[in-house]
Image (cartoon, rainbow, N blue to C red; front, top):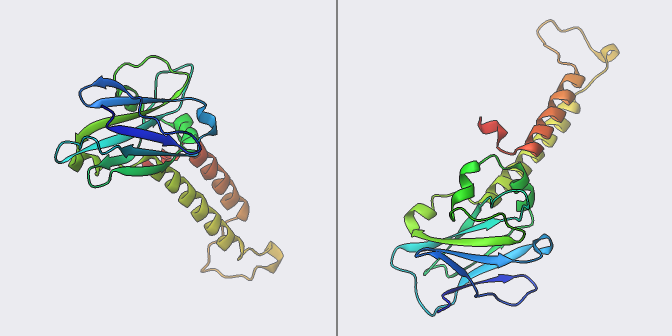
Length: 197
């Protein structure tokens, strides 16, 4: 009985999941590079057990490695469908430094197609997790904050000839700020979570 399904924007609904075990299910998604949004939903034929929810994970295909699962969010009896933007997740997958996320759905073979994994777990533990798309928001926030800071400080720049002597002030060359800004932005692009270490 098909209890859940997936809709890739612009495609027909899929209810053909592969059951890995009692509580884990996989959907295969072909031609993943052209996907922007997906919808995961309960069909309503059978409810989830009380206080349980379906944690939704996504894995981009990587012909050289096993799946790297990124948590998107969840569905439950009280929230039977959810829309997820996944176009930003490819970059996060390439930058991921979380090897523990590889084995969520067991030792899956190397995949050449994207997969959506749904794991039925206690709802209380699922709602505590941070979706991978939040990392994209952190990256965007970090970049905007850096740009704002750099622009603000640069607006006070004066040449050495314009400087008035003031023994109480400390001056930092604008080139030092520019170097820091460039390095920080590069590190943020390589790994949005580098600041956590």
